[in-house]
Structures are given as C-alpha cells and as structure tokens.
Length: 115
Image (tube, rainbow, N blue to C red; front, side):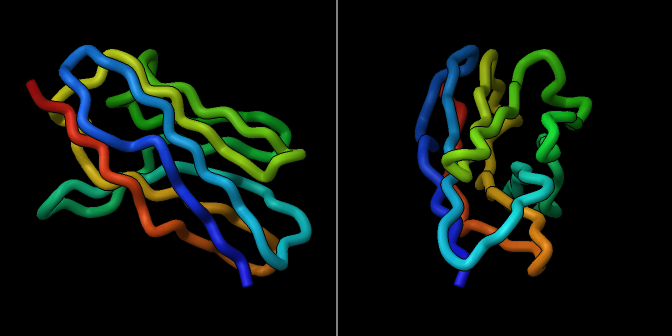
C-alpha cells in the first residue's frame, strides 16, 4: 500500500511564503513524476507544478516565478516552495506521484492566503 503524507500548509498573509512537503511510503519501486495540484472551492483540481525523476519541471503559468518544486529521491519526498503568495493561491494542495504501479494521491493540505 502506498501512502502520501503532505505537510506545511497553513494561513499566511499576502506576499508571504510557505513550503509544502510530501513524503511517499509503502510498496513503491520507482517514482517517476511527482507533482502538486490544487483545488479551490467550486473549481476543478489543477496542476500547480510537476517534476520528473530526472529533475525536469513544469509549472502552471499562474505560479511561474513564485513557486519552486523540488524532490529528494533518496527520501521519496517532493517539496513546493511558495513565495509571493496571493489570495487566489488559496486552495487545498494535493501531492501526486506516478509510479509503475499507478498514480497515487495524498489527502491534501490547506493553504489559505488572507490578511
């Protein structure tokens, strides 16, 4: 069984920063892509950023220049460093990993950007 545990969400003022972490455990062999998605109330889940095993990254246009995704393959962990946060970044953030055994999701961590 594969488990993803996210942490690092919270309440932050506009312009602030947060760092999300997601650690994968369980019956995994090789993790290919790792990514962060978010879902705001009443909206569809959307890709925020993803990173391949080799380190290639892809970002949503709305977060380019503000967010940075990284991973530690030895720790099966992916990070999302978020700077210059805006109220429109408020959402539940979900970790996703792609393995040879399928796609797996975390339960999400809430990020709220508000003054």
